[in-house]
Each structure stands twice: as C-alpha cells, then as structure tokens.
Length: 133
Image (cartoon, rainbow, N blue to C red; front, side):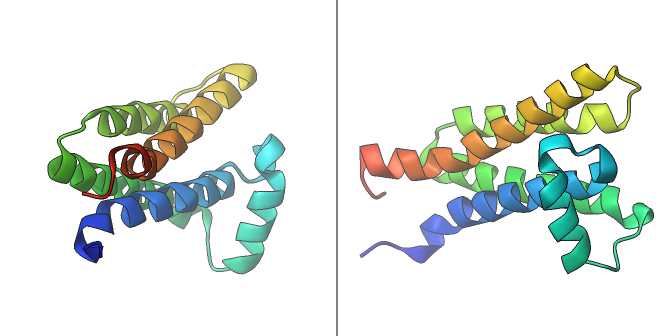
C-alpha cells in the first residue's frame, strides 16, 4: 500500500495546474482565444471574480503548483519538474505584466501553461516507470 502523504506533491501540483488553466483563462477574459470557453465557464462558476481578484487568483494557483512540485522534489530528489514548473510560471506571468505583441502574448501563455501541465504530470510518470516510492 502506498503512503498518501507521499502523494501530496502530485495532488497539489496537479490540482494547482488545472486551477492555473482556469485562472489564466479568467484573467485573459475576452482575449482567451482557445481558452474562451474555459473563461466563460469559469466566469459563470465564479461570478464574484472582479478584475482585482483575478491576478491574485492566478498567482495563488501558480504558487500551489510550484509548492506541489517542490514537495515532489524534496521527496524524490528529481529536480527537473520543479525547474520546468518555474520556467512555465515565468512564461505564464510575464505577458500579464509586459506589453507584448498579441501573437507573442499567446505564445508565452501557451508555453507557460503547457510547461506547468507537463511538470505537474511528471510525478505520475515517475511513479509509473520507477515504481511507487
């Protein structure tokens, strides 16, 4: 039987990455492009989200993902997912604070979200190929 305490990093990073997708689409609102349906569902599910609440929500979900990846690194000693998560967080958050061309904005958002998702799934792949710790 596996210890649920050891899976905490995977659960936290996985839930954080999914929540990051919703909060990023909510922060982008009308400019979400492919994430527009996600933005609509998120806005309908969370009607209380005002623009002043959207960026702290995005930061909180990114931090939750990174904390989960840090827990995984501390338990396994495998730093690649954490570094990939940090790079994804940088790529995701920079466009919201810099004036970028629209195509570059979408590219940064896509690369950031993809990197966070891949990094958050790394613990599951690690357990599948290397056995249960």
